[in-house]
Image (cartoon, rainbow, N blue to C red):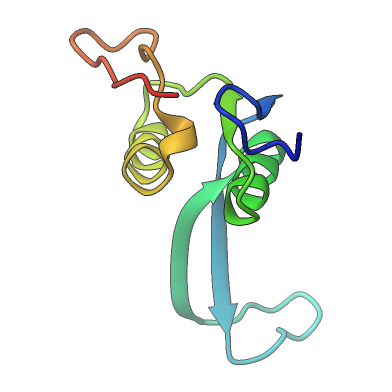
Length: 104
């Protein structure tokens, strides 16, 4: 068996979070500040990062984790749900009516 048979795979239990990346044109002086040239928000967290890496390597993977109810969590939910089938949860706690698809 090489891990690609039906039902074979990895379940990652871990953190699902948001990465916030701010790009500047340079480092600020001590005690100073720098203007932000670009802002990017995306999927992050140790568990999510491991699951994405496995999925991108062709390993069947599912992620078990918690996503909150705030605006940042809604973004993470949408990115994870639509981009990675590994993140198709059964339900999102605390958000009425949000039920994701399950898959194998």
